[in-house]
Amino acid sequence: MTVITDLAQSPGRRGYAMGLMVISSVSISFSGLVIRQIDLADPLQINFYRSIALIVSVSLIMVFRYGASAPTHVRRIGRPGLMAGTFLAGAGLAFLQSITNTTVANTLFILSAIPFFTAALAWLFLRESLQRLTVFTMLAALCGICVMVAGGIGAGSLYGNVMALVTALCFSSYAIVVRRHRGIEMLPSLIVSGLVIMVISGLLRWRDLNIPLHDIALCFLLGGVLSGLANALFIAAAKQLVAAELTLFMLLEFALGPIWVWIFISERPTDWTITGGAMVIASVTTRALFELARSHRNTRRLRQNPL
Image (cartoon, rainbow, N blue to C red; front, side, top):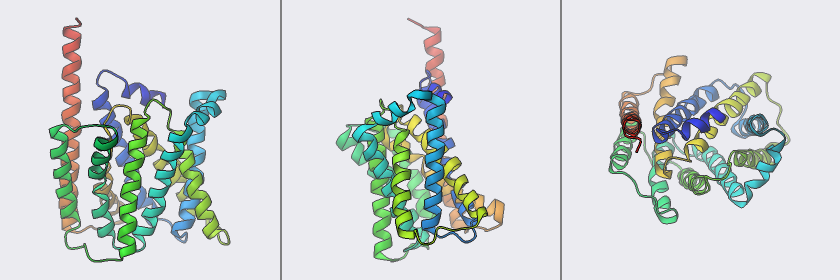
């Protein structure tokens, strides 16, 4: 995490922060592939063990980074950290309800609105404005998402669609809280999120938490490695990127997820999914590369004209 923080605070910090978000989105995009390899565990059981792994991994990061003072930093998150963790837990729980009660296309389409919800909330509460290039990128990526789910959107379940909307609003709110309180070490908020999900999933499934060791290992990979890495990078990048930019890069997750399933278990996505995914990847990657190139130009200019 020290390396992550140093990168985010370097002269080309915005470009590097976008790079962190690309890595974050790519890492979490493997979640679907991991879940497909789970044999018997149901969604609540997956969430229970995933949350345990997330709590352990974030706790280890805190101890590694802060040593004996780690508990002090955990207490310092205060109300903002508790709010952030609760919003993130709400997003995770609502997503589970959405994906099991409506079509994947419906869920994906509604979640693609996260950057726009975040932009609206950021303007309202943080007074953050967007660069014109970022707005164009958001629109291009949204077009890609629309192509991905073309033909798959239907009426679905009203409950499932509402849960997808709740997921989007909760995650957007989480991004706003993390961004607004970027001066606070927000990693412990992930522990709060894990505890909330673990308790709720455990209470709902407490009679049957026995699953195969193979499934437990995959849940630990999902929570301890993929979710832990993605969320740690998200928090680090939040120190430099406006809230809408943070969530914009999440669209890479939606685009790459079907590709990994195709590559590793030969489950071929539709041509629409491939085309739309390519549009999302191209638009978001171009935005990141543009910012990185501009950061390098600014750095060279400062070195040539230090005064």
